[in-house]
Length: 233
Ligand SMILES: Cc1cc2nc3c(=O)[nH]c(=O)nc-3n(C[C@H](O)[C@H](O)[C@H](O)COP(=O)(O)OP(=O)(O)OC[C@H]3O[C@@H](n4cnc5c(N)ncnc54)[C@H](O)[C@@H]3O)c2cc1C
Image 1 (tube, rainbow, N blue to C red):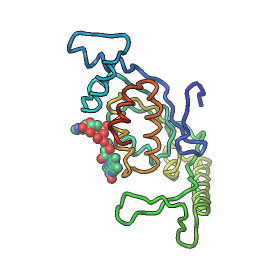
Image 2 (image 1 turned 30 degrees about the vertical axis):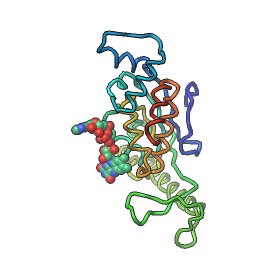
Image 3 (image 1 turned 60 degrees about the vertical axis):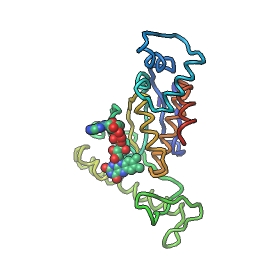
C-alpha cells in the first residue's frame, strides 16, 4: 500500500482502508462557483464567503459544491462494494479477479450483531449477545474463519486443476476484500454520506461514510463545518 496518503483502518482489522489520493478544489472554488453569476472571482476566503458556504449548505443549494472533487482508494469487503456501486454518480475502477489471484484477504469481525425483529434490514449491536448453541462472538468468528479458509482452499484447488480464475472465483465468499478507486464531486459525496451514515444503513458501510467525511474535511473545512452544523451526522 502506498504510505504517502493517510489511510483510515475503517473496520479496525488491519486490512480495510480508505484514503484520499487526489482532490481538486477547495472552499474558495465553491464560493467562486456560487458567485460567478455576479462575474466575480476570488483567490482567498473572507468572512462573507464563510457565511455564503454556510447558507449554501443549510439551504441545499448544492451545485456550487460540484466544483470540488475527490478520488479515494478503498479496500472493503465485497458486500460493501455492492452497496457502494449503487451510487451511480461516482466513477469506479476495481481490482479484477479475472486478472489476479494475489493478496486475497477476508473480513472476519470479532463482534456479531443480532437480527432485529421489527426491521428486516436492521441489526442490533449487543456486547453480551449469545447466539444459539451458546456461541459468542469469538466462536462465531472461528466458524466463519473455518468456512472462509475452506472456500479459499477450494478456490486454490480449482486453479490448480486448471479452472480459469474468472470461474474459480465464484466459490469465494462475500467477506472477501476488494480494492477500488472511486471518484466523486463534493455534492454527490455528501449525498452518499447522508444515506450511508444513517442508522438504517449497514454498520460496515456507515464506518466508510464517516471516514470519508473526516478525510475530506481538511480540503473543504468550511463546507464540512456547515455540514456538521446542519446535518445530524
Ligand atoms: C439504507 C439503504 C437501504 C437500501 N436497500 C436497498 C435494497 O434493499 N435494494 C436495492 O436495490 N437498493 C437498496 N438501496 C440502494 C438505493 O435504492 C439507491 O440505489 C442508493 O442508495 C443510491 O442512491 P441514489 O440513487 O440517490 O444515488 P446516486 O446513484 O449517486 O444518484 C444520486 C442522485 O442522482 C439522481 N439520479 C441518478 N441516477 C438517476 C436515474 N437513472 N434517474 C433519475 N435520477 C437519477 C437521483 O436524484 C439520485 O438521488 C438502499 C440504500 C440505502 C441507503
